Image (cartoon, rainbow, N blue to C red; front, side, top):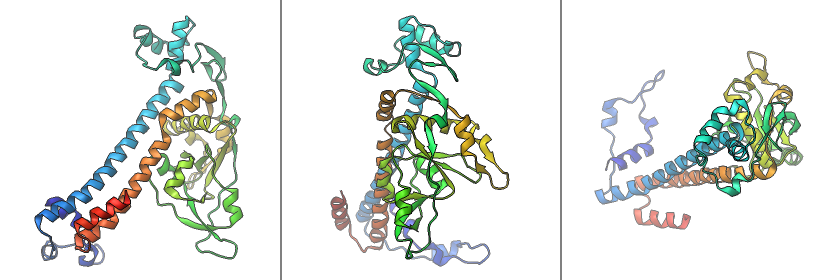
Length: 353
């Protein structure tokens, strides 16, 4: 069974048969001499099926999380960049449409049902646009610099390698790369650092808090904290002194809307203009708070977007992937070596749920 052989290669300690020093390699001759202990073919099939099923579920969850992310991005653009529901409502009411949205208006004038939103969601949007600092925006929404909606939070702490009389709490310490991985739907290996009880308590992350990568080549990247992340990382969680913290003045749901505008500003290069230094750039968070303009919808609409964008569901899928991967990694060496037989493995999986 070729899949059994694949999992055998994941188990075999290839580092023990490497040759050479400067550029280690494995020769064909050495590889061909390795003894492969294989069970009868039906058991090979069964082992490959058990491990393959776990891998298939991990891949399915990954694709589902990716699909949810793309769906959320598409809805965000439609609602909060193109203002499609407001355009549709304005057309129904006979109200004027901003020139910058003339193309969207023409599309919905010719296809009035193209948006496909249920009426109870459409009613959450106004039917007219008003002037603001950012030009015309939906009536009842706010526009202003990021600093109108966030304040700079407490700086991070890197902690100690080992426990000490003062550093008594083992905490997961988020670095900039960890924040980026979480925002992109990947589970990072967040280091454990020792901090004091006060340091951990003072830096407790709350729903809607934003962490920004504060230094290095990719400074300006960010993530927004959700309680659901504790299922991935455990607690307590702190953040390193290379991260910048922003605490919301608005609701957590509205903070998510601001954060998605921040991510877009990073992708289009605007946030890079707030980097200082060249050899080792740092992020000017004060400049970003003063100059990054965002549009904020009412809290009820932001909450509805949160329900539809399903951030918590994506995080739950990530947590499932980690559990499945740990189960696969625990079973693989035992099944391949023959230490655990198929029936025992099936019982083990059943107990694990």
